[in-house]
Length: 342
Image (cartoon, rainbow, N blue to C red; front, side, top):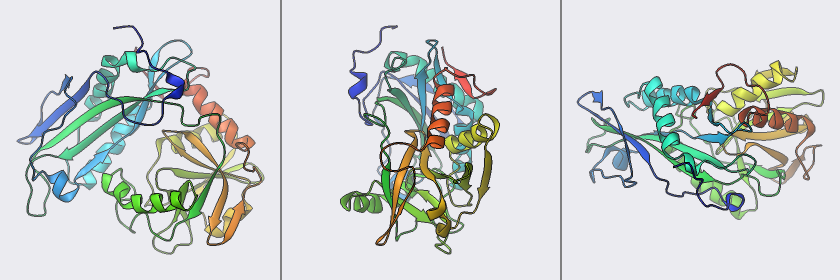
């Protein structure tokens, strides 16, 4: 141990590469076992497992970074643990205790530390915790047994050659139902978005912008990220809705805007009719932190943001630089944001 893997970090994409160890814990007879680190990357379950019959599963995504100081760290893993607990409760799955959840992340990252990209490479170690119903279910009901797993995979910089603004389109489909599962990280939400994302790519767009399912007048999120806007007078405007996923990146950017950059922040319902008046737009999430949006296509009409198609808008750039600075150890982190692994 201690030798970094011989990987061309700068040419990595966002894909799966098997690493040394993963964590596995099983829930049976009403209790979780201690869990174990294993070399075995294969999952063995019944042909009638709850996840295969009725999609009973949820997941999370977070990253391990090498800081400027040479430490390996994770960013706010306790929030991922709490969000997965919310997902489990909504899907009638047993909650994996938050403290043990964070400990499982620490164990897996330590066991795969040679796969954590060096500082400055732009690459990171992506961490995927997930849980699924593993026991046979044929009548429609929750499974009796579950498996919680965590694996890691090294991923490259999300933007090769800089963050070029993307073009998104308003979708004719809904991402979630009113009072549905849009606010949890259930695999089924993502299954439902696949048709639209393939269609968007075929039509030359990077992503779909979903409007609220009840009235289709308010901005929700895209298939895989929350949306943020900056007004012409430099206010951060963040759509609020009960059917969007509470992004940890978004919550962190809101705090940074208010407390570090001294910006006015509005978390509220955002009418789609307002969007044409905003100065900047971005999509935020774990993978890219912020993807700048240059243009929104709405059934023949184009909303072009003043920040343009060449680079991030100035305020979006400041938000991006501050958050990545905190993650990479270049800037002091708010208390509790950085979990040092080693």
